[in-house]
Every structure is written in C-alpha cells, then in structure tokens.
Image 1: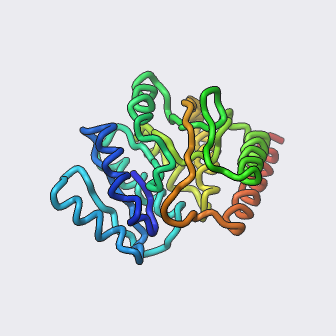
Image 2: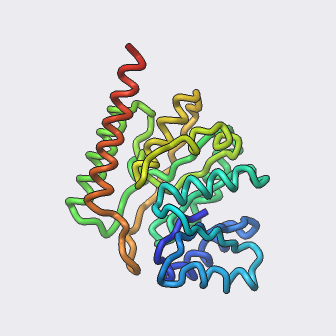
Image 3: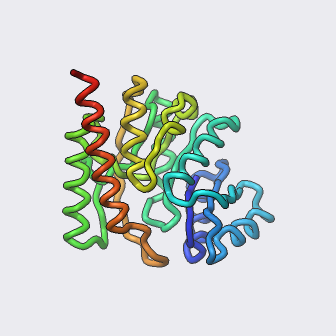
Length: 234
C-alpha cells in the first residue's frame, strides 16, 4: 500500500518494482485526488493488471489521513499482512519478502530502518541527515518505543494488530503519524517491533512533501505524546 499525491512520474516504475518483488501481492495506491493524474494512471494500469488497485480519496488530504484510511480499510478486507511503502522509489521493494518473513516469525510490526547496522541514506544533504538523526533520537527518548527509526514509512503490519484500533485512533496530520502509531500500539501492549536494514535513496522525480510545517508538527506531537507518557506513569 502506498499513499500518493502527485506521483505520476514515479508510479509506473514503482508498480513494476513492487510487482517484481512480490508477484502474488495486491498493490494498492491510496491517492489524494492528485491533480497530476496519478489516480488516472493507476486506473489505466489496473485495467490490465488486476493486482493493481486504486483507493481514490477526495476528503481530507495528507499522508496521515491517507495512511489511516488505507490501513484500516485493508486490515478489514481479508489480508493477513499490509506493507506501507513510498511511491517515490526511495524504498527498496526487494526488502519486502524479508519483512513478510519477519511477520511470519512472530513480529507485530517490521520497520525498514536506516539506523540499524546495514542501513543508511543516499543523496541527502548534511542538514537533512542531522535533522533525521536528531529527530529519531529525540523521539526514542520521549516515547521509549524501542525503535531506532521511528519515522520510517516503510513498514509491514500484521492486520490483526491494525484491527486493535491504535491506528484509527491517531490524530496526527503529517508524518508525525508514523511515530504516533508506534506509541499507540505500545499503549495496547504491542511490543514486538523488528527493524530490518534499508538504504533510503532520495527521490529523483517529483517534489518532496517534507516542509517546515510538517517538521514542526512532528516535534510538537512527539513532545506532547512524551508528556502524556510521563504523566500516565506518575
């Protein structure tokens, strides 16, 4: 499953890579009515490939809203596992089989991690590297979820974990959603988070959705959740 907004330049190659990595998987694009025609292109491909499916959204836009809608809908549609992966080709689809193996071995959530041995990033500026490192360390300190890469959107979930309601209860608007999901799952005693190494490659086509507003929201949300955790322990 991939939440998208204006990813027409990447969607063909993305679908090709994911289809090659997991040929028996259904691939869902959760599109926020992209003005560049991403949804239309997915429909065209899906007309000849029944494993490619579109969830078209016209309401509240944003990564968090699209992720919530897609994950909850698919978790109640008969799938045992759901993988979330970015459509901008930054995530290596060949890692998906390993992630699914980890779920089969008992993991609740598998995270494609830049910050475990073997992981890393390519084509990032020094500022973005430092920002991501610092942000993840701060998140780990405040939320104590036991994960080094709390902001990775490349994940595999067991569907029964999603059906616990933690994801539908999230309130984040942007990428803070990713950290809030881990926090809410921990509150429900879901603790078996496994990280597998990935090398994140920055996009070459299309525009990044990252912004100062998203970064600020993320830090505020993490701080708020951390204070919530602290006062609950008292």
